[in-house]
Length: 288
Image (cartoon, rainbow, N blue to C red; front, side, top):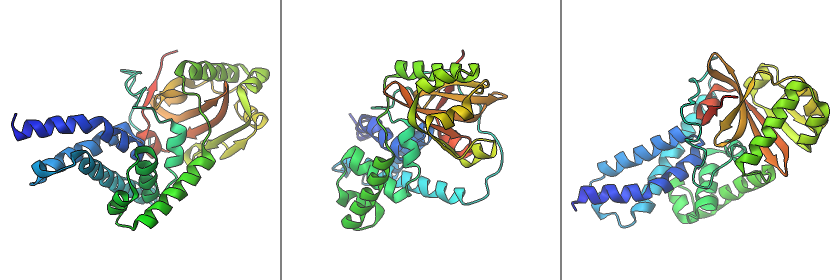
């Protein structure tokens, strides 16, 4: 076996792990694939590649740096005025395509991770999710291990303060979301009350708010008042592999509804309409 074939085999053996890191860093399957591909290209451009002692660690470092650059670029673009427009049409060719990503990361967690600064997100993802030592993360961030530990700690507190215990069984998720959509369309107050956690929180991003949604609603009765007799245009969808819904206009998603389900009830709904956010969601709208 020549060096090139051996290197290819070693890279493929690490691909799933690299993609898992990139997905948690970026929240987008397609961008994760781009980051992994860039790592492959950089490996081939490295003259000493055959002498790398720990290829898995080297590749993880490269993917992390690529993702960090992508996150920083994404954040700088957010500071510029965003042009109106819709993302690309949804892909319904294979609804199961990204239903399971390793141990599956729910969109509720991805929404929280997206509020972190790029360095915080990298420190939290690499250390808390992949057990990368702080001294290695510090080298990526060009900070001290102590500073890196503080970044991860801040990120951890924010994630823990926002986290719920979600329902992970897709069939049960779908049962609850289907029932919610039916009750909303039918104006069934009692059914909605039974489906919603008393402390449910509904949040809308700034674009969804411009379309008429309330920035934040708390409590089942407030949420019922917003959804009763509505959702007629919403269709059931896979949202990053979890049960959700989407309002689709002319074949493109206008608003995505991401549900957090726990204990048989809906504990949270995120309304996402920002084109930049929608472009990073793996969405499959299913036929009724």
